[in-house]
Amino acid sequence: MKVCLVLTHQCNLACSYCYAGKKFNRHMSDETAWKGLKLLLQGTGDMELSFFGGEPFLRYDTMVAMSRVARGAARRSGRRLSIQVTTNATILEEKQLRFLEDYQVWTAFSVDGPEEIQDVARPFTNGRGSGRLVWRNIERALERLSRVHILMVVAPQTVDHLLPAVERLYRAGAGRISLLPDLEADWSRAEDKLREVWPQLARITLLSMLTDQPLHLAPFSSYFPTTDRFHGEVSGKCDFGGEQVTIAPSGNFYPCARLVGADIRTDVRVGDIRSGYDISAAQALKQCGEDALRQGGCGKGGCQCIALMPGDVKGQLHWSGEFARWTSEAAAPVAREIEEALGTKPSELVAV
Image (cartoon, rainbow, N blue to C red):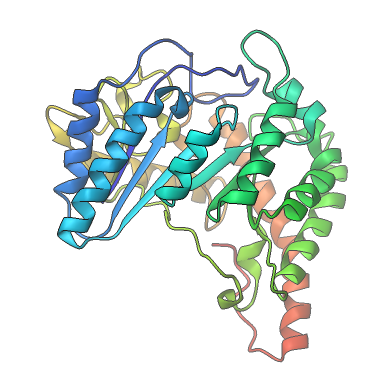
C-alpha cells in the first residue's frame, strides 16, 4: 500500500509554473493525517509513506510524528516501510537532516538550474531569490544522505544551463536526477538547442553507468542495456490506479499528488477519508490517461496524469510525444554502442 499525505497547501516559494495550485493556509489536521496513516497500516504488503505539499517541511512536526508511528508499526508487523518526501530544499537545518538520516527517507529535492535560473523560476513569495540557499542545502544533504533524488524542471529558457547544472550535481554526489520538461511551454523555438544538448546528456548518462559512480539521469538511464549496473534503486514506482492514494489536507483522495492542486476538482477524486478509497474510480482515471497517451503518440512510459491535468492537454500530449521521440533518438544509438562493446544481446530499446 502507498499513501501520500499532502501536509499543507502553503508554500514559501512562488514558482512560475507550479501545478500544485493556489497557495493558501490549509494544513492537514493531525486527525486526518492519522486516518490516512491507518489506511496504510491496514493495507497488505510493503508500506510506502510519502509527504507532499505545498512545502511539507512547513509541517515538520506532523511529518515526524506520522513517520515515528509508521516505523513502529512496521517493526511490530514485520512489514517493510519506505518513507519519501518531496521538498523545495529551503527548510533544511540540522534537525531536518537528522530526521532524514535516521528514518532513511528518500528525499526528492526540486531545483531548476544554477542559482540565477533558480532565482527566476523559483523565488520566495517575497520575490527574493532562493538559488543560493537551495544549492547550499542540497550540497549539504548530498554529503550526509544516501537516498537523494533531484527533480529538475526543464524549460526552453533553461536548456543552455542543463549541462553545467547536471555536472555540478553529479560532482556533489547526486546519483539520481530526473529531468521534467515543462509541457505547457512552447518548445518550437528551443527545439534545435534541446536536440543538441539531449544527446550529450544521454551519452554522459549511459557511459557513467559503466563506472562505479553511475548517474541515473531520467529519461535516459532506462535505455542502458543491463540495468543491474545501477546500484541503489529507488522505491516508489508509480501505481496509479492501484493501491496508491494521495490524501489532500481536506481528506479528499486523489490517485496522484500531481492532481491535488487546490483540491477543487471533483472529476479526479477517488474517495475521501470518510467514505474510503474508490479503486474503481482510480482505475477508470488510469484507463483515461492511458488512452490519451496512446492517441497523443507519447509511447510507453508517459505520465498518465498528463491527460488529467488542467491547462492545454492537447499541447501537453503533443510535447510529451515529442520528448519521447527526442529521447529515443538521443539515447538508443548510445545504448547500441554499449551493447556492441559489451557483447551483450541486443535489448529492446524502449524507455520504461
